[in-house]
Length: 413
Image (cartoon, rainbow, N blue to C red; front, top):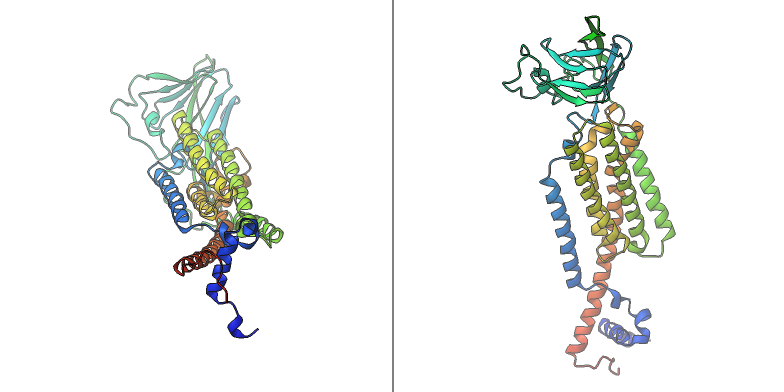
């Protein structure tokens, strides 16, 4: 065949248009008939962008979930250690590394914890009732880890005004004698990579078993613990995610990016959301948050999980812009579940009822899930760009065919 007999680009486009108009051949000869229309894609893209923007704005205008984690941090380098727990029957517990102390009175006697000026602060009765003195300055100072405003009504020399705060003989509180009160590192910590003693502390008590009050003290120490390596959970989670995406790529080598990666990406997002639901339940169980703070945490986390999961559903269904939904979900996961808990990756003492590695790997997964999502998003965008180019070629041939005044069939050569 001579070069003059070769079909021109315009003829090829016309032949494709003819095939597209022939229903029996449409499924096999006209892949462009299934290509996305540019106008529809623009509208869908605007919806995805608008949905992501509304979600981001909602969370940006909402207090941080850290608000719901009680009045102390979730991770710390400080550890409070009790060296002398006082008489038998006093069961002490250190909360959150150094965030607070818990006391359960099983002595059968009345135990009174003294405040910072020697005034009665807490009273543990033999029947299990626990009372807090509203006139004690310690009552107000201990409302926050770093102290709080003391009202004029507080007076260490005044007659106690007792308010019942528990009925099971146990109570938890922030005691500023037993933890570090500043956000700055203590000057005694000259080498952060070494364990170092920060201070020793005591808390005075009185015990009345019916024969008169006896003064006792509990004693302890506050230690600085060096940070742990942050990278093992990061490397571990990104390796697992990469393995999943790699296996999906090998199994779907002859398919499009959407058919190959959309559903694995959605599954990864759902797994990370499930891990963060468990982490939220652990937050509620391990912290001394109020009911208001717990409800806030459940509401914010529920909205975040629902938002990310809904975007993952779009990816699972392989809609036109599935990769945009997946990318948005990945960014939200990093921001909402990873960014606010960064220090849990390296600080040695965590506020948790779970093994520490569970918290660290959950936070790491919230960061690293974005890495495979970016990769599959790029592949999905590349496929979409190719589809658009092929679709524009078909539309160009159709317009040329109409401008030439044909009826859809190629003219004789």
